[in-house]
Length: 288
View 1 (cartoon, rainbow, N blue to C red):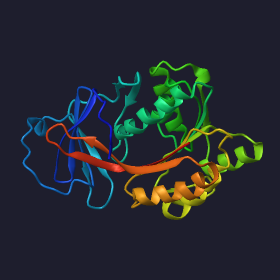
View 2 (view 1 turned 30 degrees about the vertical axis):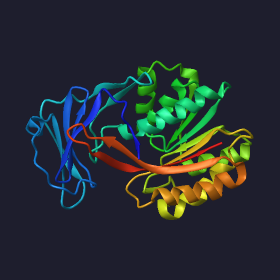
View 3 (view 1 turned 90 degrees about the horizontal axis):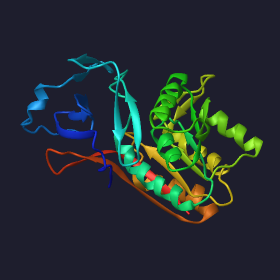
């Protein structure tokens, strides 16, 4: 498992009964996690001293209960010199997936070692964690997300992280439509990052279902790779797409045309209260 173990401002403290106890900077949150199917003693006192608790509803969704938590605060990923704004919003999220730091560390090293200008396309780019990491490493990033609000949030994170405005091109658009246009324009990228949702709808009601949409989309994106590409990263959360599936998709859609090698594994977060590493989905990595 690839473990995001370089955090100082974030930790999973404990897990029990479908929930995880987390520290985000100085604030303690309790949030649901479908992987936590065990019931173990809650010995850490912070289970009763949380700043925010997301209660999942039996009917789907849920709601936050706050105890002395600001509307917004900032944490740092010191390992790469990044800063992020956090704000609890719909469906338990805070605006950051800290397990992705394992991938940020991986591709930051590749970008730095390239010793040349590197163009990266980040699709379904959310609040820009990967965008900021890639730009901090020296790449020029095209950040694409269909949500104007998420792109605005990502811009805040880029500014907080001290990135020059010229290092990122911000695009509010449907990812599929954007990729199709980039192919027609003849544009190319040295690396592609994608974090696709399990389910979504395009601007004209087009349905995205990851099980049926992801492979054709990877095939489409492969056409955007430059003559000397560096990497291709695909993330998958609780969709049932196992590492072996990610390996096969990248092998047949990318490796078959560019050589290189493919690896895939679970991504996880260490739990400070015990020796557990909490699984948080999977990632597939192609690298030349």
